[in-house]
Image (tube, rainbow, N blue to C red; front, side):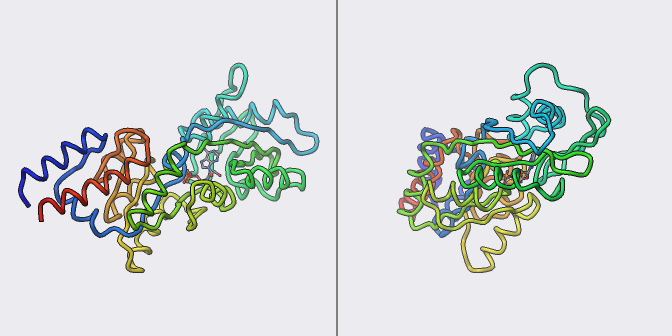
Length: 286
Ligand code: ADP
Ligand code: MG
């Protein structure tokens, strides 16, 4: 490898908005055949908005939202930001806040222990809430359950827009010979809806944060050479384990630190450009 060719490659990369950690990264781009895409913040904008509040019989809608918002106010999760932002007026104080990574949050509001997150946190859903949850998920919206006093009290739905560049990016990955895989902690139905909209067939959903790295390793054990694109704290270990880790520059510092390549803008198409550019640079060198 001549240092000049590498410099040309990386200089062009900088113009496109790609930061490359070192020349050794180029070699991995030649052999990758699978590209694992994190859903939230990578394929979607990650800027979620509350779309509906559904309550169980006898539960006050404003009360459910206020309690959920109070607990979520202590979390940085995009779902939490959406819920806390939707509460009008001041939020009540929360005691004993616990973040249950990949599951939700818990805290005490008005002397009642409140949970917000996966359905399993708050027990069986009454029929009307189960229906609201399924309908939202079929549309591709994420549904979280609010519970207190040992029962599910409300379902809140949040929408996350798919980036308008994601479908084009997936098409570019395919033209480079890469098989795209959608990876998420979110519900299977939501993940399948998003995947279908951008042209991805393979979905690995409901994966806990600490298990994302195991998914990458399993694909590698199957003989795949894996690129991974992610943005979150949750994605850092998987980015590091991947043969080629691509971090969204709009994401967290931990993810950027773990990646081999950084995509300065949030545009997933640049991931395909980065791989094409790196392959071309390699051909020039060899
Ligand atoms: P992702 O892979 O999309 O980043 P996470 O692993 O962060 O997903 O979360 C997985 C699931 O856990 C969410 O879809 C949601 O059901 C639940 N969850 C996690 N954190 C929260 C939170 N702060 N509030 C509500 N639900 C949460
Ligand atoms: Mg993410």
